[in-house]
Length: 328
Ligand code: SF4
Image 1 (cartoon, rainbow, N blue to C red):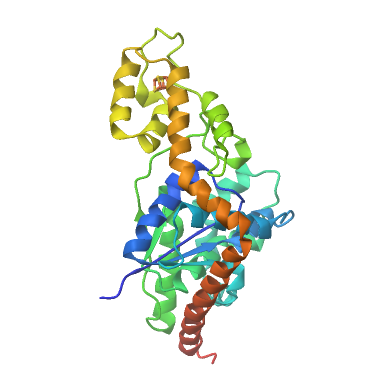
Image 2 (spheres, protein in one colour):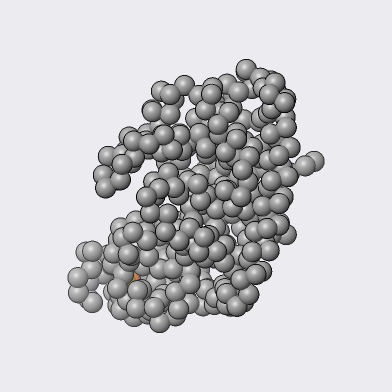
């Protein structure tokens, strides 16, 4: 039986942090073994909000790809490509725009929320409104069955399903209905206790050298109720402990849990241990990074091959779409 297809993408914002690693890449690594996976750098999506400062999109794609490959995404197992290099996404986006009622896009929760939050940007653009439609084109052009998403992205996949249903109703059953694939992922906050994000300057990056990791971990917020060294702590309220659960061996996690509760270990010492465990975890990833950095041509070759495969698939789908819409 042929494998089901999975599609997911990431905006190219440059180097990735540990939140991206546990939130998406670790899951992608597992999926590539069981599904036919297409993973892409969503550079057109980046322009929906950063149209006035495209900055270093090309360099950011390169940086992001090095992280993807170094953490274990394998071009032998999945297709890695860049959205803007597969022009068929834009064609399908245009054709879908003909059948998509405007209110469907206006009622997407993130549309209003982001307009209110990102007040420094003028987001009253068609590109921003049409972002979930482009996302639909990204998904269905590969006839993806599953889309790994966080809970906040489920409404987008629901919209994609509605649009797909409408297309199939008008023109015939060209596309399977994509389904959201919800995965439980550990929640790692930034070193200041807020969501880990480049814009908050609170992230630990996959590429951070050991000394930087030690410095950042030493600055991490801990259980806010543990003021003095002699106070017992509550690991469940501590971001450092959340990191232990991902990066430390299980027996150490249990030891920290017990020692923290009876103040047998101090936060300074515990953070020092955690930093070493993160460094140890990242060591093989850093070795791979070094080899890709020394040979950027290898990354470009992966992308060329991935874009070629993605274009082949997308072109075939567009043949079917044009035939169904009688615009051959
Ligand atoms: S000992 Fe570790 S887990 Fe406990 S509060 Fe301090 S940093 Fe957090």
